[in-house]
Length: 173
Image: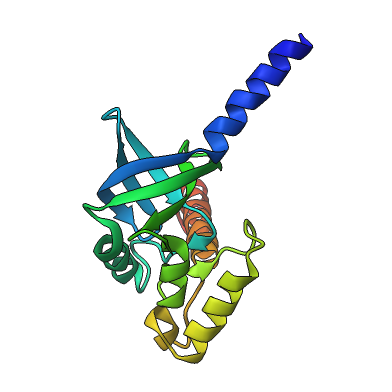
């Protein structure tokens, strides 16, 4: 049993830390891409350490266009970190030899450093500089983080459902 666990841990670590070559064939949004692997399978990759505006949020399309301009149709190298709850692979993606995509997005002001899942303080510095220079979304002094945007959207949806239920129970209101 102990041997079996060691073998499983070995293969699990290889899955997480292996360097994978792929071609980016799709851009879902600013922080999610589709990669074509050497074996011709596709894998959805969610960029590690960055959170871009949602599609229906200000600068969401700009973030998607930025990501597309950097990696669409290009060969990249990525490292798997883990799977998220949507079964996407959280990954660190490098293009043009050594450019870290998440860092480039943050430097250009098209995403937030995702401090909840990253300890990379260099990315924090890139975000501070992008804010200072009003790059990308930081040109909007009222920029809302994607996690706050999703929370507000969820609360509005919940309030609308509650209002609908109330009006069904008491049609005179």
